[in-house]
Image (cartoon, rainbow, N blue to C red; front, side):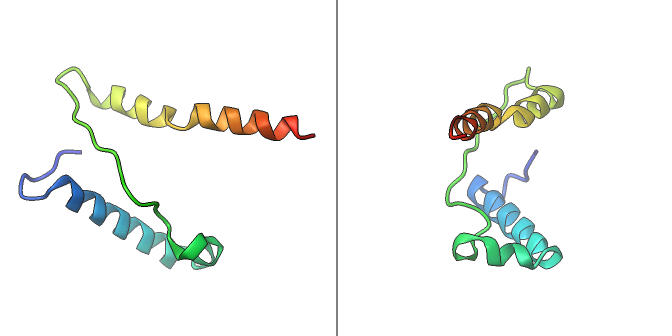
Amino acid sequence: MQSVSSYSVTKLVTLIKSITASEIFRLCPHVKKQLWGGEFWSDGYFASTVGRHGDEHTIRNYVKGQGKEYQKLHEDRQLALF
């Protein structure tokens, strides 16, 4: 994402989290009841810059791969219980 220089990273993340949570709660009101304290997003965020070699394809693959190792570990632990 390219941002206008007048917005800080913190402001952009806050806006994205706020808008997406509001839309999810509007479209799926039952979701809020299932969340601990009604909070959709956890506190904090991670932001990093991308060099000139980080094109859209590279970034997309990186984002798609996030959490896969955690899911694998989580699934393995669940299976071990049975």
